[in-house]
Structures are given as structure tokens and as C-alpha cells.
Amino acid sequence: MARVTPDLSFLVDKASESLAARMTTALADLGLTARQYCVLDKASAGDRTQGRIAEDALLDKTTMVTTLDGLERAGLARRVPSPTDRRARIVETTAEGEALVGRAATVIQGLYDEVLGVLGPDRAAVVDGLTRLVEGPLRGDTHETRPRRSSRERNSRP
Image (cartoon, rainbow, N blue to C red; front, side, top):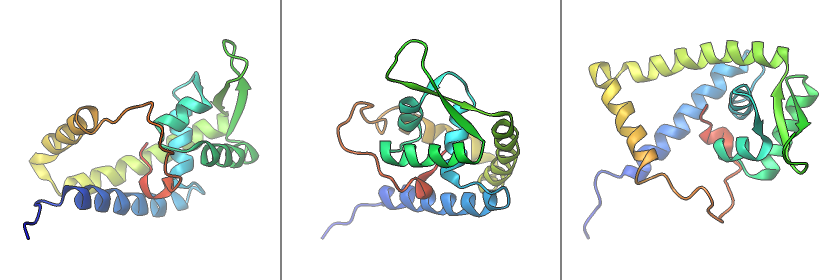
């Protein structure tokens, strides 16, 4: 039987799973999960609805609501009515949330630098290649009907 090589699916999944585990460990001292960081990071860009952040973070609606509930209880984010759509909520980070996402970004950047550092001079080419894949043939339909995976801890990407 012919085998497919390289096993691109395994390589991408394994890299994502391992990176998410490293992110979880790195963010633990700040009291954040990778999912919480991802949501705060996307919200800190400003003027984003809860639905848009969920889509950008690859979160299903239930997971997004649960994550935001926790961030609100912790005083890191708040949901406010959208001025243009009465059904939508804009997610805002609080001053405390902004400060925390800034500290977390420094931690995550250090982790990324460490992980990508093993690539040496190939680093830029690998990142460019992955970017072209996810913006091209692996982009997927943003309006797809299958539910998003809720295991964002495993696949968090800021």
C-alpha cells in the first residue's frame, strides 16, 4: 500500500498541539489560558464583535460565551452593545485586561522566538510558507456550516 509523505496533517496537528501546550504552560504564571489570551488579544484590536472574535479565534459560540463570562468576572473584558447592530455585542478589554494582554504578548513572543529559533535562517521562509498556506489553499470558507471545535486550548493562536 502506498503511503502519503510527508504526513502534512500530522505535522501541522502535532506542531499546533505542542505549541498550545507550551503556551498554556508559559501563560500559567499570568493566570491566563491560551484561549483567554487569544480572545483578549483579538478584543484589544478594538471594535470587534463577540461573533467576529469567535470566528477569528476559531471558537464555537458556546466556548466563546464561556470564555467571555470568565474574562468579565475577572475584570479583564466587558461586552457592550454595538452602536450599529442591536443584536451584537462589542468586546472591550478593560485597563487591567490591556495590561495583562501586554505582559502575555511578551511571554508569547519569547516562546515563538524560542520555537522558531531552531529554524535559523529558514525562519522567515517557513513563516511565509505557512502564511501562504493558510491564506491560500488551506484558508477554508469563512461561512462554513460545520461547528467550530471547542478545544481551543489545543489550537489557540493569537
